[in-house]
Image (tube, rainbow, N blue to C red):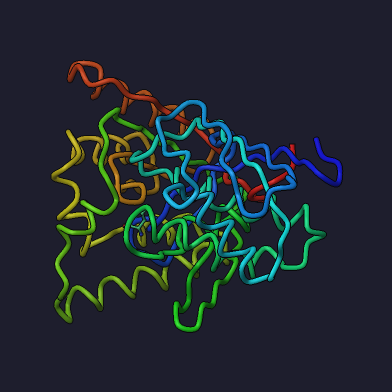
Length: 309
Ligand code: HSE
């Protein structure tokens, strides 16, 4: 729905890092996402008038959508005011890009209502301001796929250089979201600031392999490249039964399995929906006896990114 003064927006969930690509790789999910209503208002600035589904601050300066939107208005030198309603389906602290969905949705919707002065790619740096508020670091590996769809690579942060990558059409993601909250800021704090040359060599080999595998639609190469020797060994201790989820997903054919963003969600990529469903069953069977609530999503890769509803 849209006219010149109001738009309804779907903001997809995203998987950042995709194992080997900490802060640089990301992909957008289909079917998992938030809804936002953005409308022009006579009052300058941005008012968050409603949030449903999550207990998040309405105060503009404390809300990722508010902060990202204000940065965009400031850049455009626009006096136009906006009201935003946010309907959250993606829980904060889930690892599937909750703050990115709100930030990307806000800047995309505002840009649309202003007659699209900026391209989707140009909007990334403003959505990143929402991430800065949420986690202390303006990382782009969730907001880039949320805005552009598909797989994205942040080739460089300074200057920002984001590349859209192709992917084979039969690629599916299975995501288990244990209902415990892991704040991105906390799970970044526990990371080591230095890595060994050996770790770096393994990691950049895998990032290159993943990118090549996506381009050449080589599922085996994608599978071999979905390994993370730097971040996963540290963060996986926060996720109950991570190792079992990973090994049993691969047993039933997943190409790879890792932490979604900063966790606690865990994702697996598979060739074909049948395998993605078998992976979901494995995940379920491991989690039910634990007594921890969880949600499981099976999703194709979303090729559109944020869109008008
Ligand atoms: N790259 C970020 C991190 C993604 O892993 O901290 C957070 O969703």
